[in-house]
Image (cartoon, rainbow, N blue to C red; front, side, top):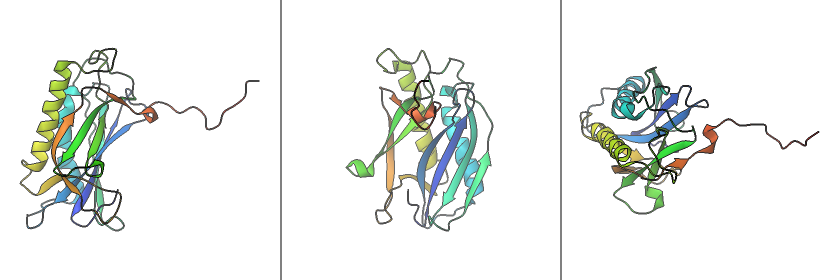
Length: 206
């Protein structure tokens, strides 16, 4: 993703025994012009790491750890970055599903088209939170949607009005699109790379 001047990319790193290969959730923020910016990349990472943890901790299994948050300021090539360690675990005592199973959250903007949309894969699915068709229960769906709403509200409105969540783009020409809502999908998604990788080449049986 390209990070223009006046924007930053945020990466939340997750780990623990439920995520043996780790996981990341990424998004962009606009550092609003004309507003005071009382943060360095490191202190902004600490702030947003706390916002992410506080919003989703109740849905995160106890064997998942909030490892750290990294913030990279634009421009892409030379902008500073910083990290803030965390180390807290989730608060959900229900056993998690397999590492590759994730909650799909759509990042909606005021513009149409696939280019102006984004998505998250949140590895917060409990074994009891879905049916055999991969559909979240009503309670889990409502809890995750409330957490997503709380997160976005805090970033966009509760942070002293100096930030706005955005969708960053791969090209350097398109301006990042402001996120106006987060929608938790009822059907879960999968990411195979969160399971172990066995070998690099196909081997014959001897």
